[in-house]
Length: 211
Picture (cartoon, rainbow, N blue to C red):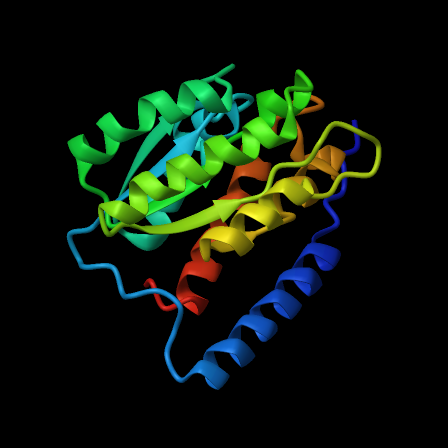
C-alpha cells in the first residue's frame, strides 16, 4: 500500500511567515515576549486528550516529544475527555505541585465538540490563565478548532489572548488535523501529527525568547 504523502510545504510556509511576524514584533519592541527558561525549568503541558496524546504511544505525545526537543522536563497534564470547567478545577494543584516556569495551555476541545457555551469556555480559559499569571508563570496558549470540514482555531482563543496578553498559536492544531496523514481519527493527531505540534512549539518558544 502506498504511504500517504504529508504536505509539509504549506505548514512550513505558514510557520515561516508566523515566525517572521514574531521576529518583526520582537525587533520593534526591543526585547522578546518571554523571559528565558532556566536550565532546570519545568514546563507544564495542560489540557485534554490532545495533550494526553490519544492516537499515539505514550512517548509519542507532544509533551514527551517536546521534552526531548528543548531538553527540559515537560509534564503531561492532559486528561482525556475533560471539559474546561474540570480543567479549571484541576489546574491549581498541578501548578503548586510542579511549580512550572511555563504553562502550555491547550484546552476546550471537548467543550467545542459538545457545544458548550463559548462564553463559559472563554471564562474558564481566562480563569486558568489568571491562576498561572498570579504565580508568575509564563503562558503559551494553543487554539483549538471547532468541528467542521474547514478547520481553523476557534475565535474564542483570539479573544482570550487579546484580553489576557498571553502568546497564542491559533491554528497549529487545526493545520495538523487538516492533513489526513497526520491524524489517527477525526479529532486526534497520530504520532507524526504530535511531532509536528512539538516541533512547531519548540520553534515558537525559541522565537519568543523562552529557549
